[in-house]
Each structure stands twice: as structure tokens, then as C-alpha cells.
Length: 132
Image (tube, rainbow, N blue to C red; front, side, top):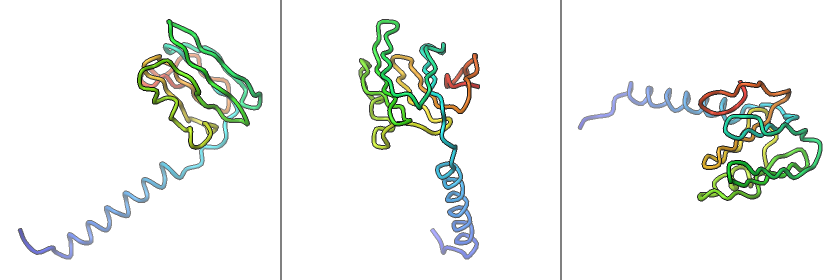
């Protein structure tokens, strides 16, 4: 093939640093603690709940079932009758979600739980279902 040139090494180092900075900016950013959890089913608001009030929310819509627990200012999905159960694993290790713009999604049941610091927008984003 050939000999690695000094410019190739410099380019590789610059790209590695740039990738590191982008990852730090995306994953290391503090989005602030949210105060509300908004549950949407099929893009429509099912309910908005204060994170400071512990509760269990049973979502039964379109023949599907999901159970969400709000405890200690965090939200976690604990039950779902979807086939893959991926939504039950999202943020389980962290004990749930509590930061602005974090979401838990049950794609088969079309349930989206999002955290915000204020009242949600009435119209969700067409792609993600999150508040605009």
C-alpha cells in the first residue's frame, strides 16, 4: 500500500479529537432536571404528571398495556405487553429518566414518555412524537 505520511497521522489525530469533542458535547451535556412527565399514545397526550408526586400510571389504550412508575422524581416503564420489551430496559440501570428531553419509547404500543420543565406543546413532532 504505502508508507503512512506525517499528514495522515495529523489528520487522524485531528479527527479523533473532533470526534471526542462531539461525543463529550452530546453525552456530557447537562440538560437540567425536568419537572413534568408527558405520556403520549399515538401522538396524543394521554397525561401530564408532576415528577414530585409518586404514582403509578396504567396505560390501557388500543388493546395494549403499559405501566409507568413515577418515584423519587424519576420515571420508569415497568410493564408492557409489547413483544420486544425494549422499553422496559431503557434507563432501568439509572432508575428512570428525570432530565429535560429524555424519553422512553414503546414503539409497538406507540407510547412515548418525555421529560420537560414546563407544560408540553399540544402538537408533537411528526417524527419522534416528542413535544415541539
